[in-house]
Length: 315
Image (cartoon, rainbow, N blue to C red; front, side, top):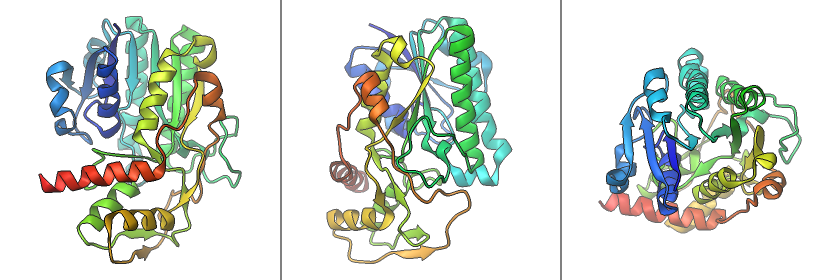
């Protein structure tokens, strides 16, 4: 049985990974400052995990959290392009300095492997599709720069110190427990919340912007598989985590409309600075390295997410 640390454990992704780790028999420890997460997300598992209320910028707290840990799943971040554009300095701390703190604490503690929530934002707005890990990154926003720099830190810690690291570039993750009221939430969470309330959602741009919308179960599966994979296949490397399918915002809106029964339309607003026009992943490298595959498609994911949202409103 392994002991694992999940940073950002009270967040949407961190809490999902924690549940899966518990199901596999791991001893789970978590750290979160609750800036974007909520204890509600881990309420039913809180008695089975060691949760520490602390910031990843607190080096003493991070060092303590890493003691006796085998694996670190580093999910803590401020995952917002608009926020990074408005406050590049303020977001750099959690997104980059915090990552360095986690790596250094893991190195000192003798952690076996660190898995990092990287971002597809690293690819920027290159017209080449699908996005492949070998492509030259062209980050557009401060957020993208911060997450990409984190990848380089992880690769460096493997090359220089021998700490096994894996960067997983997430593509537009969605699912239950994603807070639709937060400015950091993904577009699907906001669409679902508004449409269930009978309100008109907003699309920035013409709606033909496309994304590789990826249900949370795929991310959880990728993390667990990458944690168990042989070091020579994954250590110091970067992998896409997505579905390999491109969906426009208008198509996503139409699918949510079908499932929810929403009778209204959509409002269009000007495109936002720093947003990427098109994104879809090539996931063949992750398939070859650690057997990653899509375990849940868009339709299934939306049905599960909408069902959860309806229950949450009812409660």
